Image 1: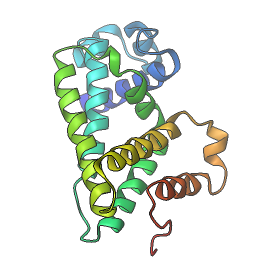
Image 2: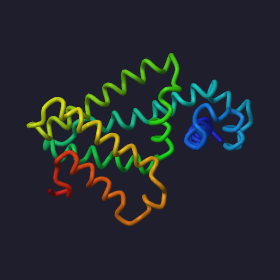
Image 3: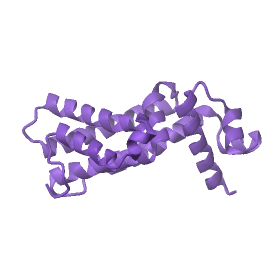
Image 4: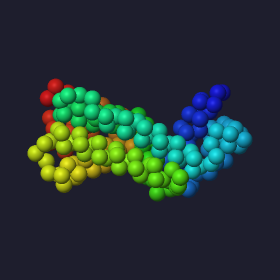
Length: 189
């Protein structure tokens, strides 16, 4: 197994364990055992749980911040695209998003400062997207809409699997978020 594959395996295993037991409830030995790796192989890849958590947060933020770049000239279509991307990402990477949402207090320096800065930038980009799409909204309404939207989307990470597997559940969640933002629901709306 090459180092990239080993790193991916460790991160996916740790995300599942942190989701199940919390950051403080899962140990390096358990991560190694579940991943089928020896202690030395684990520590050659990551220096400890804090570094693993920081790598998970970096992975999540890289994906989320990258998606907030304005891509479409129509602000409503661009916000719809952003909502769709985040819903799809959250459902597809449930363990990672659950850890991102629940374990941010466990992140320590030197990673904490960078994470906080990047998360602020992420929220600011969301607010800009909402403000472009809903120009009549006041700054307070933009902030509230952004937080409500993100809270709803990220809550999908902890929905029961059976609910998310129900036909149309993910589309219904996306439509709910769009309605909350006051936007038409359909792709051509």
